[in-house]
Every structure is written in C-alpha cells, then in structure tokens.
Amino acid sequence: MSITQQYLLDTYRAQRLGTPAPPAPGSHDWQVVRELRDHRRFRGGPRRAPGPWADTAGPGPVAAPPAAA
Image (tube, rainbow, N blue to C red; front, side):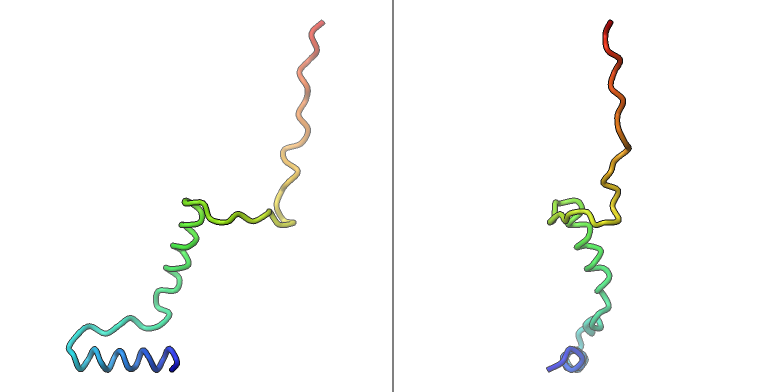
C-alpha cells in the first residue's frame, strides 16, 4: 500500500467516524528537517570533518612577543 492509498483510507475512516482528517503526507517534512538540524546543533549530534571549502588555515601566523633584553 502506498502512502497516498493509506492517506485516502485514513481520510475515509476519519470522515466515517466524525474525527478530524489526518494531515496530508509530506506536509510536515520541512518542520522535521528543521527540528533534526536544531537537535544536532544544540544537543551534540555527529560532527563531520570540514569540507574543502572550509577555512582551515586560520587567521595567519601569530607574531611572537618581543624578547626581553
């Protein structure tokens, strides 16, 4: 049974029982993606190595403090 067939069956069943219809498939996909991203960001998800586009060189060499005379 496909997702569409299951949705149609659930909608028909809800109509017959007088209950609210279920949300359409895919209507909350972006919300789930955002919540997963926030979960990984704030609760420590798996970290990946930076890609080739990441600036891994840093700000450059740091000057040594002057030597004491």
